[in-house]
Length: 120
Image 1 (tube, rainbow, N blue to C red):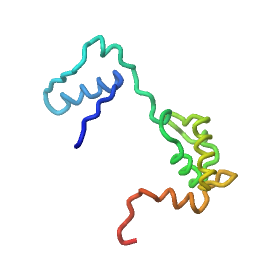
Image 2: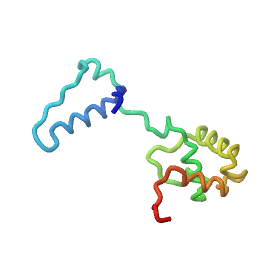
Image 3: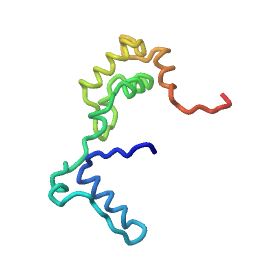
Image 4: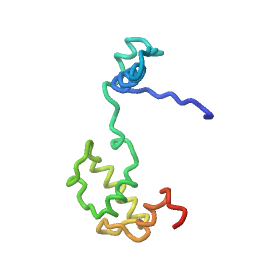
């Protein structure tokens, strides 16, 4: 590990981590911030889907043949505007066609970075 990065977390995350201290045996949680700083933390973290790059998701949906993501059951649905931007990018990259369907290039792109069986 070359560095330690610190980030602000939500109260819910801090409380969940506190619970880990005593999960299997008696434990103690030491917080390196004051109670007032704890109270000032956001109650919940922002769902990742609201902050993430949605191009990989949009490409996976196109490969699945999903034209309307609202037909899927989401914990937090992807924002329409961000998903539209991702689709525009994928069209510019020729990963999806004008109908939003994955092209052969787009299908190959989805396999990038995946672990493959060394025998294939």
